Image 1 (spheres, rainbow, N blue to C red):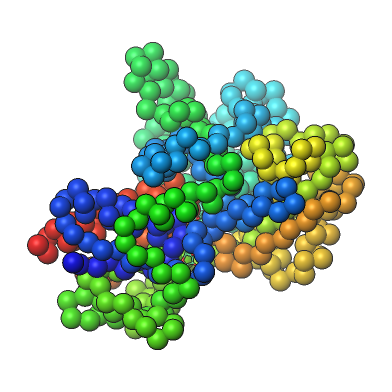
Image 2 (cartoon, rainbow, N blue to C red):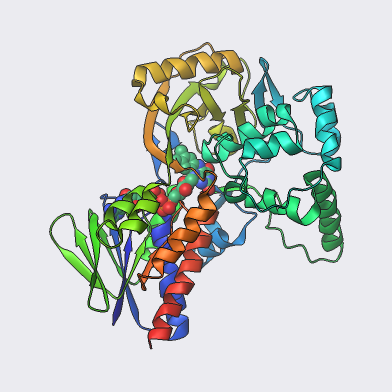
Amino acid sequence: MSKVVIIGGGISGLAVAEAVERRAAAAGIELRTVVLEKEPRLGGKLRSIAEEGYLCEWGPNGFLDSKPLTLELCRRIGLENRLLRSNDWARRRFVYSEGKLHQLPQGALSFFGSRLISWPGKLRLALELLIPPRRDGEDETLADFARRRLGAEALEKLIGPMVSGVFAGDPEAMSLQSSFPRIHQLEQDYGGLIRALFKLQKKRRAEHRAGQSVAGPSGPGGKLTSFEQGIEELIPELAENLRGEIRRGARAVAVSKRGGGYRVQLEDGAAVEAEAVISACPAYAASAVTAALDGELSRLLAEIPYAPLWVVCFGYQRGKLPRSPEGFGFLAARGAGRSVLGTLWDSSIFPHRAPEGHVLLRSMLGGATRPEVIALSEVEVQQRVRADLQTVMGITAAPDFIRLYPHPQAIPQYRTGHARRLAALEQRLGSCPGFFLTGNAFFGVGINDCVRAANEVGERVVEFFSKRG
Ligand SMILES: Cc1cc2nc3c(=O)[nH]c(=O)nc-3n(C[C@H](O)[C@H](O)[C@H](O)COP(=O)(O)OP(=O)(O)OC[C@H]3O[C@@H](n4cnc5c(N)ncnc54)[C@H](O)[C@@H]3O)c2cc1C
């Protein structure tokens, strides 16, 4: 029976193993998957830590239900009845700017009533309607795109926080095309964002009337979705559903060609041979394991940078806060002078995140704009978070519960030139038939993006075996 080795047991590795097994079974091809995970636990960034009645997410706290593939995966592995949707008030999102928390407007009318953007800033935004689309195909930073179409204030208060919230990224360096391809496409297809907004709203209304709505169960924006015990609940079921082998504590150190296939060398001296290999680990780790296989492939992978992050959980008795936080949380505007990129009000987003009568706030610090923060001590990080929560939310009380999680390489950054690098990687892969790349370093960092990429790679792997016969 042919074998496929998967390096990495995070959501990407487990989802690609599931996709390969499912598609191979459908095609009548016998394949055996072997997942290699260097840590004793599976899940990678998906890790939910329950302590003292709090449930702290080490990394992601959910996925949006507006895209179908993660939901479908949950259905296939029998988790559908355990899905937990975010509370309704989690739609209330805030931006901290000019000394105040401003609720992000949800529609055009509330936008004009909001004080987040000044009147000159609103006027500049409205002028977006008159700005011709740029169609020269050149990669552009998010900051340049925002200044060109929306104005400098929208960059500070809307685009900057959005980039922090998804990538912990720097809009001056990130590629619009690669990081937010949907926004790029809207400019290409409709000539501008406001035009796109109106036309899409009209289309959705028409689809809704005709009963053909294709949005997920919670509409086009989607709802953050997790499980009662946290996002990690996805992992054991996914692993148990696999028919192949999972080796924990198995770090791959090198991949080399062997006969018609590959040999994956492990740190402990053992090796696994297989007809195909899928790298589902971070790009820097994939770079290390491919150094001997293809120097250029390895070099290109090493060029994808990662931003560091501190995740800081503070728990409080509700009565000690000046106001009960009800909403998703806040992101800080660029130039708001805060250390935190933002704070998620986790116990307001989902139930079961804090003991009765308590709240859990999860702050993020660092990112691509302040990478040096990762070198601070835990005491300094706590001090910064406390100072910011006092300024932004008026919290003077000391937290009753504190957990800090450092991520030296948290999130890959799709800088300008990312698409060119992906094309070069694709070309190098041409000389390594049977070697595939997946994970969050290429086509999106959300859990939904990882599951989509895993499905696409799963299809290509099975196609590879069916062509081999
Ligand atoms: C703080 C934070 C918050 C986030 N919030 C959200 C969110 O709310 N929603 C969302 O959708 N996304 C969020 N994300 C992004 C999302 O969590 C990640 O993009 C996704 O989990 C990445 O999954 P992965 O499997 O590709 O990589 P990883 O989770 O990094 O998994 C890779 C695995 O490979 C293993 N590995 C590495 N090297 C080797 C080797 N040599 N041999 C064997 N195994 C190896 C690692 O141990 C790891 O288990 C967040 C990320 C972070 C850091």
